[in-house]
Image 1 (cartoon, rainbow, N blue to C red):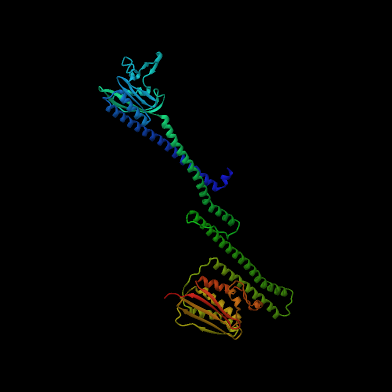
Image 2 (cartoon, helix red, strand yellow):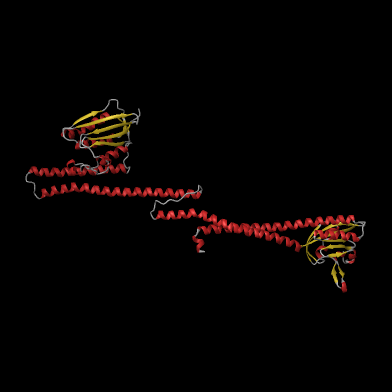
Length: 511
């Protein structure tokens, strides 16, 4: 029983076998009953047909003697394997032929005549040695009155004359002198039962063969049906254990095939989710490590200068003011870093929505250059502006685009040698439906292997000069995030020793 509880193959096989057994059993019972009733009715029809032939022989031999009629009836009874009894309402049993009987006209004395006791076929007659015997079987004798009145009667029961159970048909006939008569055609039930038993044996053997075949087929079918289910069970267990690379072989397009495809899709999605979570976790660890590293340096500088002031290491007011200025610079750097991190956080989590609208880039670029003027003039840089007059508006957010351009300009100014040139340009590209804004410098350039990494948070190319450049490592990451939030993209081109060009692509507003 434990095997059936744990095995779906055994459950399917047992269910199908029981279904076959119940179905075949029900069909067998119904068929046996129907066959038995049909066979009995067929025997009644054959007996009735034999009775009609006996009646025809009686009519043909009306002018013959009793011996000729007896011979014809005996021959008919032998051929049909029946007993034929001819009875007269007045003269009693006239003939009884077949089934081992051979009585002739001398049987007319087997009745008691008519008297106060009722008709002769319902009376007892004197037998040999003073005994009493039935003139006719009680069941048949009770029906003769109906037959003599012209009714055909069917009988099933015991016949004392034959000493056996019989099927019988009682047909009315007219005897000479217009005397009512009856022909009783009887067949032994033992012969009919033998035929029925033979048919039942054939049906039983066929049913057993069908059960064996159905059992084998159901076992094969249950194994075929359960095999993909077992494969899915193994795959589900492997998924639960963390093996997201397992797949279920799908070999059909039915419900089982759909379930297998769904399980494979689930495995793929889980693998992607887990990979994404691992990447996020690694990014989080890297981000925390980078923030800790970036905070440690300015905090160390601030603490060092503060302790120097506290210990009175500044030899004069000018040196003390220099210490304080370094403290202020590092504090400003920390403040800027915190502000930029908050800006990135709001955009990456979707808490800050960026709405774009058509924006004229000419005035915006002039405003950005004016804000950055003190920085590039301090390094004695020259700025070349290449902006066509027919430049169409761009779909952008004014504040975000201003911050993007300021970050790119500040980055270019920090890395440009004193007295070099900056180029700020704008260009319409109708084929792609975009506007390209670019900032080019004449700095040391970026090595090719590091160019894809410059958009990462806290990534710095000149790590040995980080303190000199005073950058937070977040500027280009903010540029990329802000531009993508406006539906654009960023690119960078650089040649070591010849400078770098940063490009911002924004969708052009339709006219």
